[in-house]
Each structure stands twice: as C-alpha cells, then as structure tokens.
Amino acid sequence: GKAYPIDFTTISDDSDNRYYVQEFKNFSTNSGNGTTPITDKISQFIAPDCITLGGNGCFYNCKNLTKVKLSDDFKSFASRSFVNCTSLVDFTPRTFAKATTVAIGSFAECSSLAGEFYFPKCTTVGEGVFSGCTNLKSVKMPNLKVISASAFKNCTNLEDVEFSKDLYKISTRAFYGCASLPGDIIRSLLHPGIKNLGSSNTDVKDIFTE
Image (cartoon, rainbow, N blue to C red; front, side, top):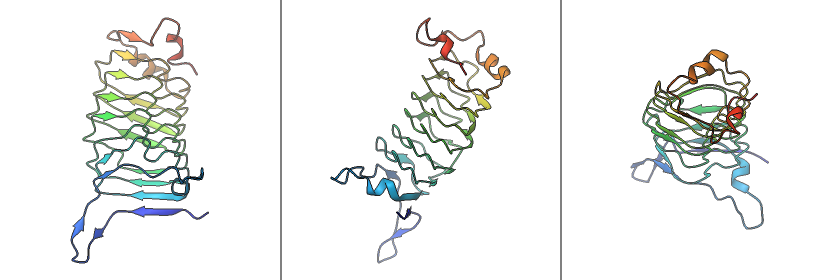
C-alpha cells in the first residue's frame, strides 16, 4: 500500500503558538489482528526539534522508512531504535555532538544506511549497535574505550573506524564479517593498551573473522 511521511516541522494551534516535538517514544506495532498498519506504511519521520527517542524499538521493522530527520542537538537513543529499517538511506544528523551513549542495537540491520557517523562525545555503545549495516563506510567515536559485542558485526563495507587511544576492550564478534576493514586499522586497534579481547579464549578468533 501507499507509504506516508510524518512531519513535525511545524505544529501550531489556532492562535499560532508553536509547539516542539522534543521526544518521541514509539508507534503502536499491534493493531489487534496481527498486522502492523503504521510501521508498514511510514516512509519518512521529520522531527527537527527531537532530541530524544524514548521508546524501546520505536521504529522497529519500519521497512518502508527511507528518511529520518532529528535535531542537530540530538542526544539520546532508545534501545533498538531503528532495528530492521532496511530502506533507511537518508538520515540526519550524522554528527551527534551531544550523544554520550548509543543504545543497544540502535541501527541494527539498517542495510541501506551508507556513509559515515561521528560521535565526538560518545563513551558507551550497546551490543550490536551497527550490526548488519552492510553499506556503512565509517564510524568515529574518539572517546570510546570499550567496543561492545557484535557492535559492527557484518558491516561488510566498513572501511574506517576511530576510537579512543585508550581503547582497552574489544568484545566478541565486534568486527565479525567486516571484510573491508583495512589491515592497518585492525593493527592500530590491537595496540599494547588492549587488556581484553572477546569474552573467553575460545572466541577471540571471532572478533575479526571475515
């Protein structure tokens, strides 16, 4: 069926008072008869004043979602915010100057999402944060000291990453399937300050397996 955009750029009442959508939680994913009429149809989400996504899985499985616009001051992701948004190509901002955390699975399986992301203040990322983003090219988090499990799993076109020079832990399957990640970058990640690789001696080999 037809896809629909949702635009919160301008909201005002009869007196022309302006309102700002600063937090969004989620769409209903259960119509009562097993279908998901909203998530199946939404094509764009434009909310230039939104600084917080507060609902777990708020855009889960929105497979027709192609464009998202949030505030340049955006600072807080919900867990699994955009899981399986396989058509999402146009996403802004790409620099998150105020976000210190990116929640578990925030962009997991966004297979059409390309280009780069920059998180200058991010110190924590959840498991599988970019897992399955097969077209992603670059992620820079210069203050991140721990790379979570499966963070970039199967990011097959990932070519450039940047983390803290004090990086001390790379968790299991963090870069599993990242066949395009250059050897010199991998070597730079495995610097002498690394104290923890994987979660046990049996899964260290899975961190960078192609």
